[in-house]
Length: 236
Image (tube, rainbow, N blue to C red; front, side, top):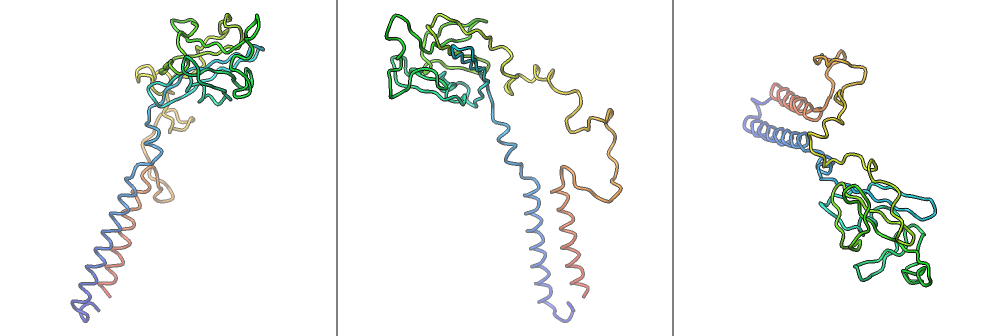
């Protein structure tokens, strides 16, 4: 058939060849493109401990993660998921209420329970040198880095937090690789638990099977189909 058509058949074959190359390029680009989730997982993550004691026996011990190198104590409190009532004050911001305990912002003064001889308010503490210390700065001025800890206690300001922050946060992804090796499982996670010794790969009994590079494996198959069609067209 191609001999009868002549140049028209040759031009058609060249056009189909170009289409096959474009299809091959598109398949290669799709196979080699890294998943979007992989880039997100590479973002640095840090964590700090937040302890809140409500004065009635209740205590929240939270591990709050953040991507920044450091965040303020006020931001740590806001990211904890607890309901927080803040208002501007002499130290930047004042914490009036945490999870329903304290003074209602906008309806009463932030220190609404300090009008008489007794006083109850949210006192702020930092974990320094293995102990709790009353914070010399406000929550908006205090900057926490990975592994730091803050505490808020509802009371007269004389009661220290009763709980240590140790063990509340698991080792963060920012831990140096040498220290993190001890926490890794002895067997790679992609090896089944019942396999004690990795075995050399064996060809599958039911024909080819897609693995981690399944997308790339489709490239030669697709190209073979296109070229086969071109060959039959040429022969006919």
